[in-house]
Length: 394
Image (cartoon, rainbow, N blue to C red; front, side, top):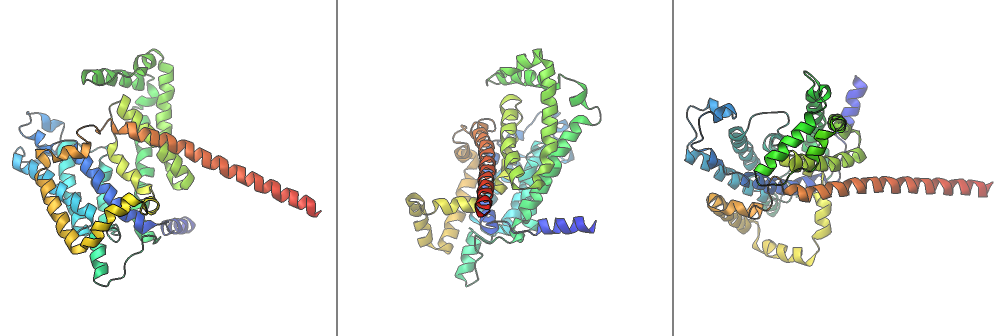
């Protein structure tokens, strides 16, 4: 037991490359992606909802009366403003807490709790973990810029301290637990995914009909899989095995890259064919992108430098005032049409976004296998060279 705890402690406190910088940049990515998530649905649509809706949305049963229009609009406006302040890095602990509380209220109004509710990751886990283990405001934020102007020592964006990786490692553990739990729920109890060979074919066929009714496209595999239930059964087993395999996230970087790339394709298939979108999970997967490395790659480009120069000239205090004004304007006009800018006029919605993400996932799978193949080739070449050198010496 002590050996196991020692190994866990060593894994937990291991340095993470560019931890401070990538976590600070992730804060910006997280806030912008959350704004896209909020823009997908106008919370005011719940006003005057028909009786009986509370049975599908349990949180409504706890309220003494139906939510007013002002309450619903206020939640959206305050959440949007908090997310914009978080993206800019203004009062990061406070804005993180506001995003957590307001997002939790909004999500509770719109859905019920479930282990497979992908929105729990950006709404609950990420902001809560970032608040408990702060650090995403120590770099690439107006808070950090103003502190540096006051003479405080800045945090290097290449700082690899494990303290800046606490949220990343915590989310990694959550994913390694939640995905296998979803797989276990499919095979325990009644065990419908193993007992019946038509669960997935029937689901695909039914959702294909729903898709056509909603004016979208039909799933061409739906009728074929219904006619070949044995293939559908093996696909059911494959889904369960894939979800159980997420314990391998803790096995190392190579397994993590392959699994994250594969799950993007998995979610794309779910959204496009089964009409079940896990768009919220993208916020969790984005944690493991080295945003610092990407930023260092593009920051010297002429266009990026042209955009950065005016902000640097303004200084932190003027930038703070400008961001606050922008946050008030965007939040105040959110329901007047500003929210549509975050979906590009409805072009990027909960379903179409997977047309962008799926190729990224496929490319990630191919790249991972190519890297492994190149590594094995390099090792084989080095081994042959060593063998030849030994024979020459003899």
